[in-house]
Image 1 (cartoon, rainbow, N blue to C red):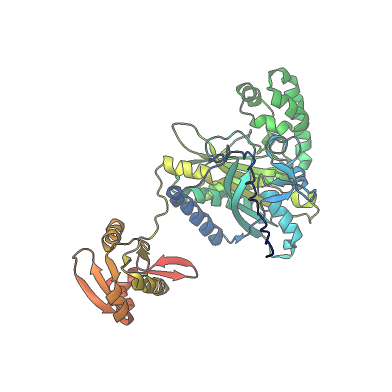
Image 2 (image 1 turned 30 degrees about the vertical axis):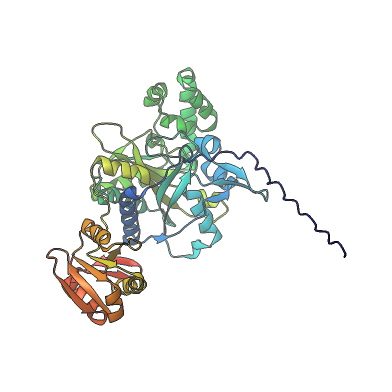
Length: 460
């Protein structure tokens, strides 16, 4: 008899896992989660900004968070803190030198030129929101990833656009419940008159060089305007007696600024001229402004700001197009909203709850929920909870007026039990009459109705 040889299979030894670096279960420094309990404030800012954009004729534009690095270097300017210290630069696998956007203006101008928006009727008004990134020391309301709402208008050099932008920024604060704000404004002139002014400024600071901080000694060579904005005490003292840009404007810039102030007076907006306000980015011309918290106590901080950048599009290779814009920091707005106890967004509460019991009822309840939603009824549920008692607890906690109960019997009969949560009275209703009955009970004028994905209420 032939011997069969059984081939022995040896078990492979388990592959030893390399020592994996432990996962750090926390956000990076300067980054944060926006948790559900914070979202009511964020939703309020989103709604107000979008409504103002619509009311003032701005069209929404969304931009990529990553652009070629030299776009920002060309627009913001070498020698600025943003470029020298704060920008997130990296090289892609394809060898492109790119950066996370530190601000919106450069990308908006790039898009304006790339997509030929210069042919649109003027002014072209664009609105955008999203995160910006700056590798800076995290501080209150200013994270390394923080969010901005941005308004820009292209194609009009009349100072009435400057006044309208400041009006929108002020209105933004008012609509959020931030009533006490300070508008600071200045004119830094155009390239023609600024040249002579910069010579005066450099000569002045050069004579006080030994009193400047190290950063400002460097700025004296690269960006002397930024010295006016330095927060170091000794630099603030030196800047007090520095030449002021508003005293050295050319005729065109002088008339522009004077007319703007007349518009602001007509609008009855509270503003102060701050001769040290420069905004620090190379592309600004003529008008610059900031909105500051008007707190009488505690630390005041900038909620947003902007200005004109009339030469920026031409410098990027586009047509000579005047422009103005501003941005607000959303985190700082929310801090100020909380400080002044402004109301966050209050979503509509559901007035009906759907409870189900049993496998067949679960299947039917998904369709019933969908049908109720299609009929414009805002409804809550607790799918997955097993007992009716636990579901009714949820309904009580939500404070709904009616609970719809769907069990095995109701699923077979095509009916639903409608329970009045105030009186405890229950009645059984057929499915085909349910929607009309619920609307009638809720007094249809208060039913939440959906329009194109947004909900609104009637009679509120």
